[in-house]
Length: 204
Image (cartoon, rainbow, N blue to C red; front, side):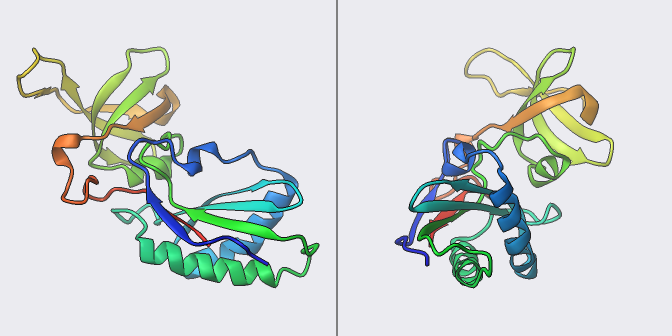
């Protein structure tokens, strides 16, 4: 039975719970298989399932929008899927009866870009890219296809001057170690979040 009080938070710094989730274990993989159909049925993508073991377990679930969609998972969607997944876990036939807390969140803006779907979700955002055997790149993600990412690089200029954009460049996935979305404070909206920010979370 879930015993957590519902809360919600937004992660602008990339230090949200999604980044600190424990590594996979067999039980987490089993729960992923159990929960994934319910997540998909609600037009979401199951990013990760992790378990903090103990007499009172914590089941941490990270959900995201499908890669073809823009924006972030809304707080209402997080609340809805939290209730649904709590019911699924309460009816888990293999559950041993120990109490648990269910924490559901979406990836924070600081989630490393390590998979093609991550890059699709970050289209239009400014990112710092760690390149294999080459100079690292800062630029805006213009497009993503099956081979790699097209970046419009940002050229450094003197302080106080508007940044200049270089010519678009294609980086194959096999040349990218990872990337990280950069927060653009000049583009924050009235709620203090970037348009399409991707980081609400809720415990249920």
